[in-house]
Length: 190
Image (cartoon, rainbow, N blue to C red; front, side):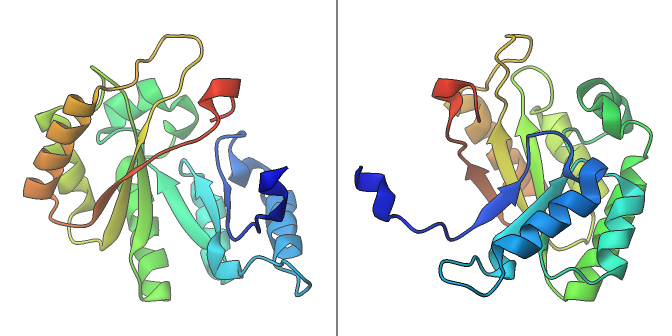
C-alpha cells in the first residue's frame, strides 16, 4: 500500500484510557519508541496526555521525563469538569494549573493544554473567560479538539461555534490557540 513507506515521526498517548493510570507501562512503551534504532521517534516528539492525575504529574516532573506533557482540561470550572471529566473531579483545577506551572518552569517552555470542545456544554463566552482566568499567566499552547462520542450524548460543535469560542479565547487568553483535528472517527477510533 502507498502508506507503507510513511515513517512514524510522533506519538501521543491519549484517549485509550487515562495514560497516567498505567504510568509505568506507558513510560516504558514511550522509552521503547525512542530507543536509538532505525525509525526511532525522538523523545521530544512523544507526548503523554493526562486529564490531571496529580501525583503522576508530579512524578513525571520529578523524574524529568524527556517526553512532552499535555494536560486535558475538559472544562474551565471544577463544577463543569466534575460533570464532563468524572475521573478528574477529585482534583481541583487550580491544583492542576499549579502542577502545569511547575512543569513549564522546569522545562522553561510553554505547556500544552488540550480542551475537548462540546456543543452546548463548554464553549461559551463565559467558558472562554473562565479558562483565561484559571490559566492566568501560565504560558500555554491550547489545543481545541472536537468531541467524539459514538453514544451521541455529547455533540461535536459546528465550525461557527468553534470559531466564536476561538475569538473569545483570543480576546481573553491572548496565547496560542490551535484547532487539533483527530483522525479515525470513521472507524470509532478517534
